[in-house]
Amino acid sequence: MNQRRDLRFWNRTAHLYGPFMKRWEGMYQEMAAEIGAYLSRDEDILELACGSGQLSFRLAHKARLWEATDYSPKMIAEARKRVRSCRLHFSVQDATALPYAPESFDGVVIANALHILSNPDGAMREIHRVLKPGGWLFAPTFTWREGKASRVRQALLTLAGFKAYRQWDRAGLTRYIQTQGFAIVSNSMLSSGLAPLCCPIARKQ
Image 1 (cartoon, one colour):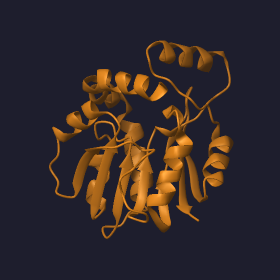
Image 2 (tube, rainbow, N blue to C red):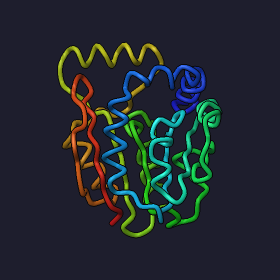
Image 3 (cartoon, rainbow, N blue to C red):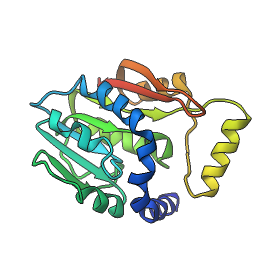
Image 4 (cartoon, rainbow, N blue to C red):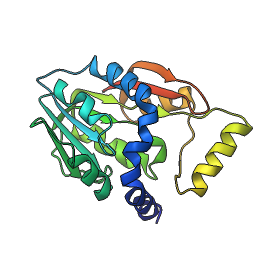
């Protein structure tokens, strides 16, 4: 039920997502710089919840293959309008039931998505499964700040159809990733405000 409702929201807003996210250009540049420092041109990277390609187009040139996926067909359709690289491929996939063989990828990127997945545990199991031993997980995630302003903001987003299922702070997000079979390598805070962006970088244990 939650997954179907979320899919309707993202399909409905897909054509607006790219223009709306232009206001966050600086944040995406920060994320791309943080993640790009760990990438290599001899690696295959899987991106989950890629949206319309905000990170995909910035980072695909740093990998041998960049497989960018999203659950929303409309988001993928928007992303495909801009494809210009043979390294970059877009497809519709469910992060909790991926079609790839075990140990297929050197790294997985899941940006700004873990907190809005109704089943993040399922996604993390799949990420762990498709990663090679020692493979990289890049999981920048908006975290939660206590206070009335944050609660009001979240309530308004929920009314608009944008549902956050998890409200981690930095320490809680770190613990969560560790319990899923990953060792934290870096855990930078890239932005502040009502929803600070935490950027855990971890390796599969």
